[in-house]
Image 1 (cartoon, rainbow, N blue to C red):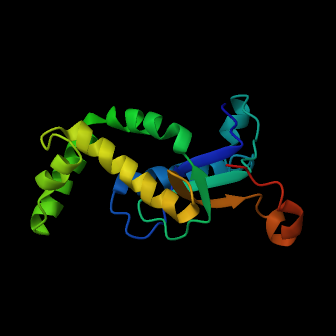
Image 2: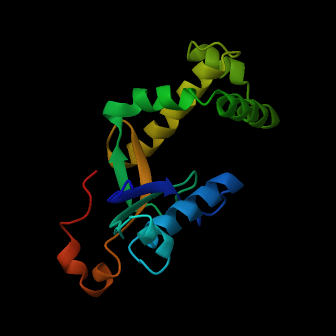
Length: 174
């Protein structure tokens, strides 16, 4: 029904992805997009009035994105990203608890670091905001921008495999 041109999802095959929900979402979304233009895979869609649709480009994200081949400058949107991620309060609380444990086990005084950043060590949202921005800043420094995200990009298969030079200027501009 939506008919997207670009799929943005978890990389189900990223190494070291321990979250089963991330792997499953990536797998299901990729399968749905990959086979959405084949009418024989889901004939019930035709019976429901849904027409085949080709999704031409895929952007896969991962926590450990060693296969990244495209970056996005998110400098103008990093605050919106932080605001959206902070809405997932249970995830933020769990991630910050894990972060505290990691600092503790490494013998690093997180409270001292946060004091230097003028952040209340008991405030999950402030710590998460700093962490999200720091991650995007670290990624951005690789590309000469303030804040960035990395993706594994795939597009226009299989035609691009046969004639790669014809597709150089057709990839999504990010």
